[in-house]
Image: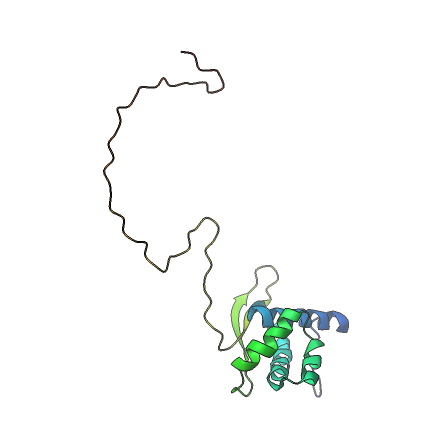
Length: 165
C-alpha cells in the first residue's frame, strides 16, 4: 500500500531528483511548454502549481520562496510580472499534461506539459527561408530597356590560363 507516500522517486537520489525538477520548472516558466516523460511531468506539475501561486501572491516572502526553486532571474521576473497577471483570476489548474506516445529507445511514455491560456506562438522562418511580409511591396512600373548589341566572346575552357587573344 502507498499510504502517506508523498512523491515519485523517479529512479534518482533526492538531490538529483530535486535538481532535475528545478531545471524542468525553470524551463517550463521560460518556454511555457516542454516535452518529458509522464512521471516527470506529473511531479513537475505539483511544483509548477505552487510556484505560480507564489507569483500571484507577489510579496517579498513569496519571491524568496520561489527563488528556492527557479534557477534564473529571467524565469523569476517572468513569473512575477507576466504569469502572475495572466493567472490572477484563475484558482489553480495552470498546467496541462498531454500524452504523446512512447519513446523509441526505451519505451518510456512521453508527454508535453504546458501552461494553459498562453498566447499563440509565432513561427520564425528557418535558415534559408524568407519571412512572410505583412505589407505588400509597392507596385513598380516596368521600364523597357534597350539592349546593346552583344559581342561574341571566346569561351575559355581553362579559366586558370591567361587570356590569349
